View 1 (tube, rainbow, N blue to C red):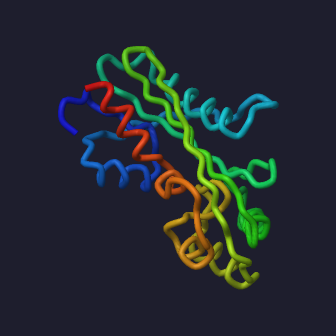
View 2: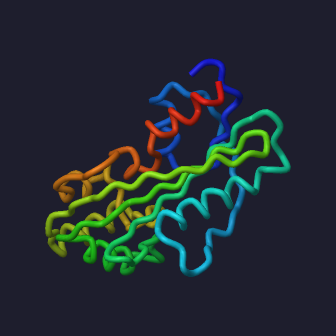
Length: 189
């Protein structure tokens, strides 16, 4: 995408990096440690946006003309937020909750440019078929999804064999709603 200021992706997610590459967006990765806690009482969309902005705020003093892109993805089932699992048993427990149910995936995005925060989010519904205990345990053992909200990657085996359908953006479930990101970046050109 020509004409854009330099993009800084503040994410170690290889999935987000791959999506930006597929969009032909030039970027560099810069990471900062950020506390991802949030206040009680927020909706799932508000949580994703709150954390995405917190990640961007860590860069506010350091940047000049660059655009900092941050994102946060959360999984919500029946009002319960499923973050990243603490360990294998926690991941297995989360996947059992998702099995045979529908859940929502929210990705909040923040574009920081010239001290202005442009925040937006996307939500997708994901329908899982009933998974066997063996399918869940072997997935967790092989893929160790400890860096993924809800303990799964849609592009990995459990997503490929378990997801019956999604309502909404596939790339949102991967971790970055690319169409919305593209439209917002175009406004900066």
